[in-house]
Amino acid sequence: MNAATLQLKVITNPTEFYALREEWDALWSGANGRHHQAFTVCWLCWLRIARPRARKLRIILLRENGRLVAVWPLVSYRKFFWTVLRPLSPEATDHTSVLVEDGPSTFAVVEQLWRAAHQRCDSDIILLPYLSVNSDLHSLASHHRRVMVARQHFSAVAKLRSENDWGAYCASLGMLSGRKPGARQRRLEKQGEVEIRVLGPDDAAENEKMVDWMLACKREWADRVGKKGEWLFSNDYRDFLIDLLNQRQDDVLARLLVVSLDGAAVAVNVLGLGKRCIDGVIGSFDPKHGKFAPGTIAMEASVKWVFEQGFDLDMGVGPENFKGYWSRDNFTAVWSMQIANTRWGLLAFSASTLRQTLSQRVAGLRTSSRPSDLTP
Image (cartoon, one colour):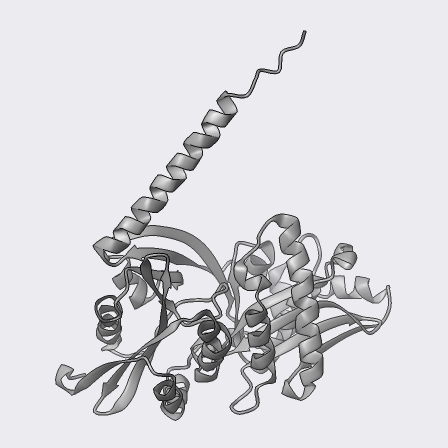
């Protein structure tokens, strides 16, 4: 790839963004893109998540002789006195990556996009959630001289495209918590009629109903365990999921799998479709049937459906046992980074550290000033 033939541009206008549709789709297909990299997914992220929150577009494009060869969709926004740059996404637990075709010049292409992100997008702070340790972008970002926060997580991928027989694959896995594949569903079937369905855009009304049901279950769980991500309680995120499941303009990019007992849902999974890999987007189950592990049944049904479609399955970030089981412990490290891109951004982290230190000291003073519990 000749540097003289490359043209880099940062798109800030939604009209220009939408005009990229055909080129973006062609690049996504040629690069075997992931679900979150598809144009329609990114456009819905803009309409339903970013624009309502007053984000500003910062989509970095690279062309070679006029042909689109790489895209990195980002947004910026103000937080207190600082400008923050982050990927255009549902802002949940989504991977960070660049859409680019693999080849001998891939690193050089990603390097140009990264340079544009931290030099041309006017940001004080850069957030890069869930960035694969194996990616060129991680290699570049991790060498920034002001990486202020770096947290490691793990993401599991079941390599199902290399499997030829479902029965043989299941037999090779052994048992999960003392049970073989299929055993939990057979146990639930003793309670009534079990049905597993995969819904599409033709099931628009039911998709909406199931998203509301799923989020209600997920929010109840979040309240119970104290994990209250802002995105989970957002109506914008709810609308994004419904639009994603019901969109018809392009290829179907998401499906909803429902496990029901006697006609009532007991577990739901949303699956995001890429070119070779399907992503587990979000799922939940009815805690009233918890002893029958309906979430585990839904995951097994999801794995089987993905296997039948001829895809791999990214089960997302987290160390849960079922992810290690279905992926044969194929975990990859992913890093969430927070970078001070300017001296002003560095001050934000210094202020945050000072605030935490003062809070801890005040808490300590309050504890030490309490009267002793003396027994008379």
